[in-house]
Image (cartoon, rainbow, N blue to C red):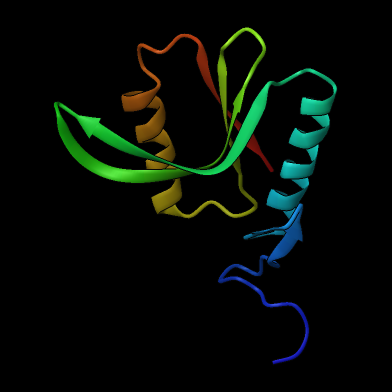
Amino acid sequence: MYGARRGKYGAVRTEYGGRRYASKLEARCAAELDLRRRAGEIVSWEPQVPVDIMVDGEKVCRYIVDFRAVMPDGSVEWIEAKGMWTDAAKLKAKLFKAAYLKGRPNERYAVWT
């Protein structure tokens, strides 16, 4: 196979800052987060953050959010870079918002498309 390797839904794996991302969109998001950090809009960010989704004390699934950014005021922005939403991804995002973010007023969920 010649050329860039593509993912299941046509995403092209892309390198940025010495790290491989699953798509060009994720790499662009990482570049944007770096710019925001340098501008002082965010304190730090990290990619591919696993979160266990718990319901009534029982683990339902693990959701890996593309990015977690910490703001200067200590609030957190969870960022998902999605070009193609599968049914499983939609369900996990809903569970994340309903089960994990509920009761966390200083955390929000954002989607890059």
